[in-house]
Length: 108
Image (cartoon, rainbow, N blue to C red; front, top):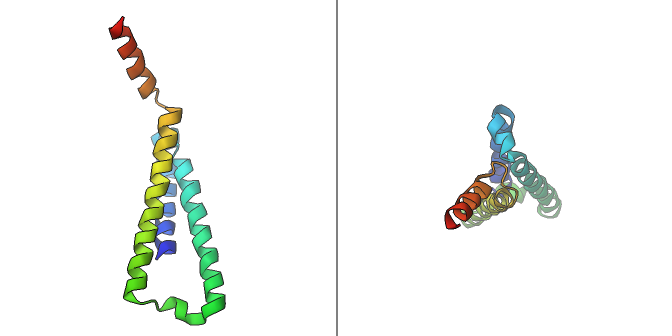
């Protein structure tokens, strides 16, 4: 489930990045890298788990599916938090700089 959630996030973020010029300006490519990296990580994890447990990997219980879904959502949330932090630090639209300049000019 982690692999499915991160792969879907990777595909959607890549499509958004490819289609929208404003998404490229908002550094959506960072999200693509984070989601594709997570997808590769979970795929490698699946390969090693399959090597240890065999076909039982593909028939998890309901509790395992729920835990994996929560983990997948946590990974997507963590990537979004990283992306927002980078967006705030880089400020590609100069939004924060404009607000600070306006506040400094009003304070004088």
